[in-house]
Length: 101
Image (cartoon, rainbow, N blue to C red; front, side, top):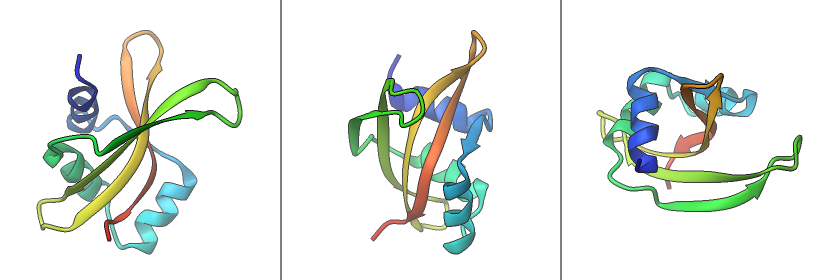
């Protein structure tokens, strides 16, 4: 299944996990969880996918960068990964978010 579709399904189901850094950036940039959900649902493409190593497990992972506006037209930059909790639930872990430049 297409990665962007999976991310959008997570946003629709409100299955988003935010790191402490992401929560700080939301507050700093006066953004809400709904702003992020709207941005992800409005996305037409993933701008870039980068391969990374998890600093805790050293496992390889893919981070997806999306730049898309919310419903108010504010361009939002997000970077996150898809992960599973249990055997069936899929979550999009939002690592950072801020208004796009």
